Length: 376
Image 1 (cartoon, rainbow, N blue to C red):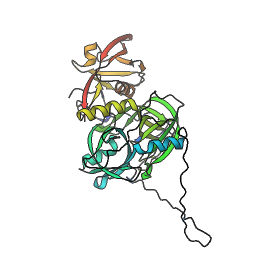
Image 2: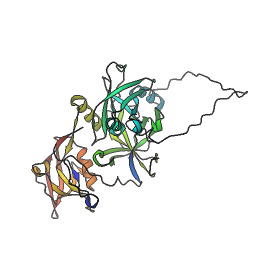
Image 3: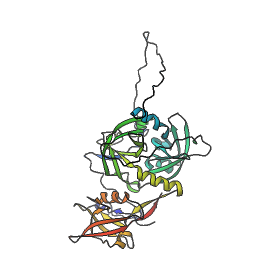
Image 4: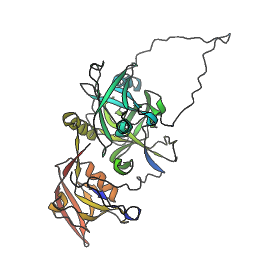
């Protein structure tokens, strides 16, 4: 395994930096207390629902069945109706770490995608995972592979299960733009197939989710559509019901085990989800782009200061050195260490990118061919 792009952890940790690690920085500054993965619809996040019966004149409970009225396909109701066959709830049975999240069918053959943090307890505790469809069927699934750096996992309906008729989600033909209408479908707080709406609030927002070895760095789509624990892994759709991203995390003002939506949610862009999922389906693993540097997060100025450069790595081959201050990568401004990692993750392994840096007060420009490492 090659060296990953690493954040030197300063005074908090003096342990040697292991190849492939990414140290955790402070969560993205978005005028909130933090950014949290939102998988655990059933992990200590109970919700009391008091439903009043429909009482008739004598107080007896009555029941009426009203046939649904079809909605035009360009309405929210029409879009949701078309998309629901592609959406699933993901149920994880892993003893004390059991929980739930969301997912959706990405490819023919019963391939479902979700967040890695939704299913990691099943891997750690030899647990079981099921996908619950909108029609109520519960299908056992196996974990095909995952990429912890992007927080993406691929599941597959197990052989012999009734999953041959699963409908893959439709991919968006265009990139999202700020102000576009979006629809999120998922299982917040265990409430299956909940629909919320909003707009794209921002693009390319640098977000970190997780801790230590499981930290994910995401160049995220930000949305004000309500996203809560349990939404993780569900689709973020455009106004035509096409897949824009995978809901992954939220900003929250809460601490402890009761985070909730404050209108600032984040989704992994479709291009990253699809690229990683296709690699996992083909090979069982996927590659994460790396620059081959160690970054100093204690640097307080604008840019990412290189603490060291991996010998014979991409950055070293291109001529970058320890002490260089990277201010732009691939045309994207780099304001700090976290921003540099996100900018790298937004590229492809083997891609050629221009890096703008400052060396001893003088600007330099180099072209780097990014390497890649397997991420399982």
